Length: 362
Image (tube, rainbow, N blue to C red; front, side, top):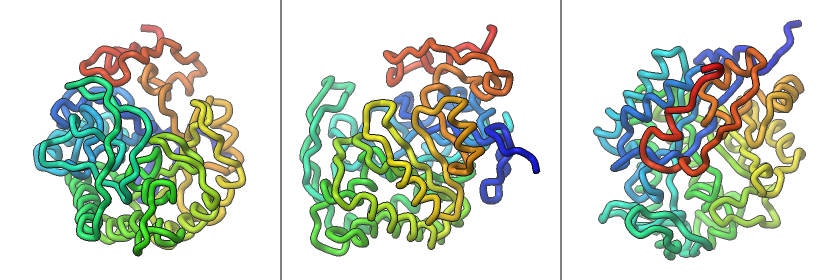
């Protein structure tokens, strides 16, 4: 029997991945005026040796543009902009999914169009501050609690954005249900204080996310959809709650029923968050029959071990892809990874610290 390894090919639904290395979604804030551009196309094209690229979080709505210079996919100009990226990646032999991220309460008005508003399942103010290009760091405001019409409208925005992504040439979409953004805000009883059909019980708190997945599956096909989750994550001022394991068990069962292509679990313990218990990962693995992607602080050795053991089908790498555009080739040839990671340019405009990292030996 052939040994399965990190560099083995993998069939993800109807697409063939040349290896099991995934480039994780990473906000890089290069989308001036929220428009995907040539610089972004160059960035993703440089990294097309990954088996699968998942883009930075991209808003399905003006209301989801919480950060400075993040891209959208809710108008024709943005769709046309993203075509540059999909063309660059496909021309280099890669595959790419668009991550749909609505920031919800993790937003500031200075980063949004004048007509947009900051919405969330409940009017719970996050702790902390957010960067704005106009006024520097600002406290988060109190979000507006979504009414039933706004829930329905936002659900449709996600579906339309997924359709737009396919029109832009993406191989699929990943919904961002992690890191304290809108979809996770509905999942958690800390941020979701509702007493209607979208709050209270585990079933009700999962309803919004599951409706979006089902409706999108009906629109673009279930094999073109993934979901990113972060059980026990603390990003976006999220906090643990007593029935967190039960929430993700129920969610995994329902996601499996819908039959989407993958679940992508991110574990931020290497950055100081609580570790996702192995029993939670194993429980999701048992309940969900699709592809499982694991990510968070992986080394090549640990990634090989988890693929070989079968706990994961694919492994996502985030920061190593920033300063190693040739990450796959370095892993393939056993070369060392660059340690020149310029954190001060993670979210700044322009090519510096974005497309100017050299390949090995250059």
